[in-house]
Image (cartoon, rainbow, N blue to C red; front, side):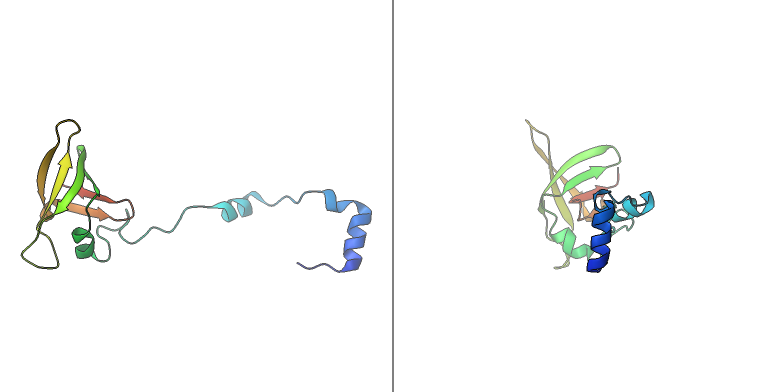
Length: 121
């Protein structure tokens, strides 16, 4: 809002320029809301828009099951189709690492924004 010089002089003379403006709480909450829109493939959708792309490029994704964390995707195995893998190799363990082969059919959900795969327990 642009004020005229006369309004500025009147405000300065009355001392109102020193009074902080108080906004309604609902407006403050709306202005400071930092909840982003859920991305495609987020918790609200079972698969991202291009599931084959994310399955081919999921190296480094965390792998979770109903029982908890399983490990991290180490590599993606080739599939019968060139555009979709059949298996992913999941590395787990700290001092004694091991690799588990997980079928793509066991993957329930891909969350690229979180870099996570969810598999059946």
